[in-house]
Length: 444
Image 1 (cartoon, rainbow, N blue to C red):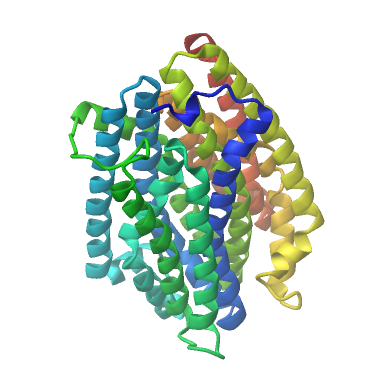
Image 2: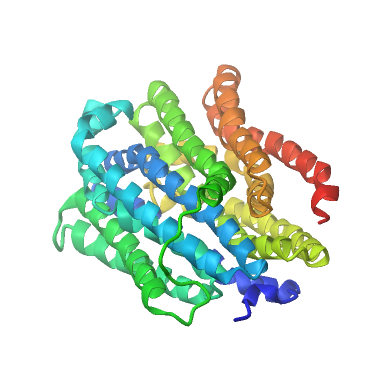
């Protein structure tokens, strides 16, 4: 059975192959964004802040899932490139079993210790009830969330990115419809709990259908077989995916820092403002992450079959695509900043101008963000988890923490908004260094 990853991709074919992943990730990103829109519209700015306070917890769950999805996918794609189809299928099965177990364990932890977790998240008394309701309504869907994360990578490697896209579209549309039904005062009116349930069901639809697909579609290059655990392969997978784990955990940590600093500087309105900016970033990040999901399987496959010319071609084309995308993202965000902020915050609100100012100061980050995401994912695909993790942890944790500790002391509130652009700029210097250092090793 020939893999679709074996072809010699030109620019158009590369975009065509990765486009479903980009669209899929954009729809995945809308899950939280849609919750934010409906919650801010029907429940209020306080509820929007409550949703953001739960994001670090959800980020931890997603971080674990991403570690196994991206690290495992690099191993599976490499197996396919080497012609070891049975090993790829066995490892796919192992990853799903581990994901189900971990999802169940994390669900139990949150249900047993909800108040302790909320205290760790530094939830204020005024937001405590709203935050707890949203957190508990999402917790029941942790296992489907793992499976949804898996299909984003594995469907691409299996050569069926369009099917993965269709699942994501169905899940996203279901989330939108259920948000209205469950939150709107004109229908069921169950408030922020309805937002959590709608999002959870949006996770479950693609996650469960994708799981069933790998059970029953025996003609697919990837499907479930009797699992065979190879600890060395599993360790390599975890190591490969460690950068995604660290990167996602870092986002949770820095989100907490943003919340703490802004709560102390301007109160709940500051948390609402950073919520909006991070929602917009989440949407734009989805473009880059979706592209890297689509192209990572190709890079890993070319690396596995030792096709150095093909590897060079894919990476060079990727630089061109990300350059164009970054320019468009910056331009469109600047032009439509009023509209983007206005989706979440009423223009008459004092929070609106603060949020818009923060977004414009945040804007330069988008010039470097796509490249940093790609470089980290590229080294994961090349089975170099160490370099990938270094780029990821510096970009999403170390540099942001340093910036948040220094810049607000100098520029006050504006320093908070400038932290991410400074971190992304420093990270691109590190990314370019490692790219040049490893060029002869991988011959890309």
